[in-house]
Amino acid sequence: MKLDQINDMKHCIGYEQRHVKRGKYNAYRNYYNTGEERCSGWDRLVEQEYAKHWVRFDQHFYCLSEKGIKFLSELLDVKIVLE
Image (cartoon, helix red, strand yellow):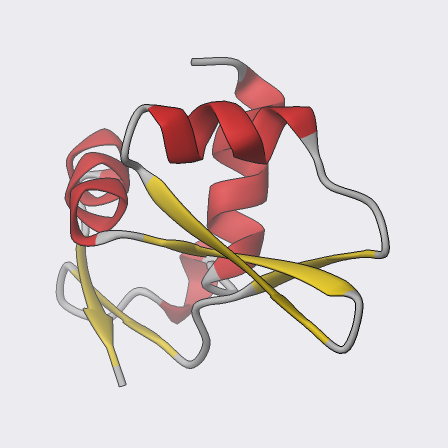
């Protein structure tokens, strides 16, 4: 996994270290819009089952799967909770 993919995963859930409270981060979103183009980094995450992909109104969206949330939680040593 590349650093830019990890950064995209963090951006997808709106992660900011300063919002971690008592080892927990409440994610207020779980999507990443790449516009009209697919993203090869995200597509690799989908292939590895860390993310999911869908298209709506000709816009490409990605979100973290349960496996992706678990991976990111372990990497950051933070419990990630989706609101």
